Length: 309
Image 1 (cartoon, rainbow, N blue to C red):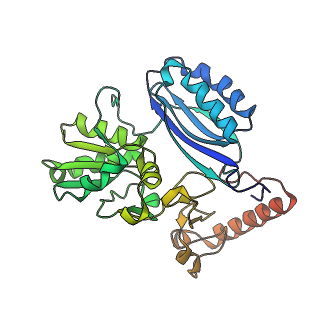
Image 2 (cartoon, rainbow, N blue to C red; image 1 turned 90 degrees about the horizontal axis):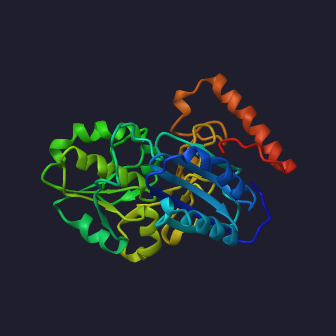
């Protein structure tokens, strides 16, 4: 994208709320119309268990959206984390209906009924520095690859659906310990702790507001976070103070890449990177190269190709 906008013009809101949302299907069209009418872009997910998503727009538009959602009794108490972007980080607005707002694939997991203890960002360092605490990153492997907390366990999951199996396989290591879980904005680890408690592990905690809240509140000189935090928009990553990070996306496999990985001989913009090069054929790479050429042409014409949006 090459929008000529002042720095920090766009406000980004990462939001979620677990609630009983009967008739959620009827909210899709009016919510999409509300956002589109105010120039808001991003993705909102609606399911019987609540709402989840990240959107961006002017500060005024985002304030109107949050007030609109908070006015609905089901969404009162919405968990929201704000950051900024100098360019619009999304291509379009999408409101999607889902079976879960964060997909674990296990029936009956209800964070409204039982969930781990919330830990404020200011108290997180003390908890994870305790030798009796096992710190678990509930995000997927490509997210963990560019940053995580010191000493955190990486389950190496490709999707959140794999997380329950990982817990079952490592239950013996978790039993009798404090289990501290974290994720990007708080929603995944909230559901993860609900699952862990459902199988009988009770000494469970999670970072309130997720990594984003920690990076916003905890000074860099006191931080136990190492690297950058992957975000699901065109900023790719953020670091302390929620400033835009250095990571870029491989446009072939959408794996985040740090600056040193861009120097790899297997990296070619839009075609391959160290994470996908060996898994692609010459035919694949030729197809990606042509797609990348078309994207560049579209950008020069000032139109959006919508690839990966």
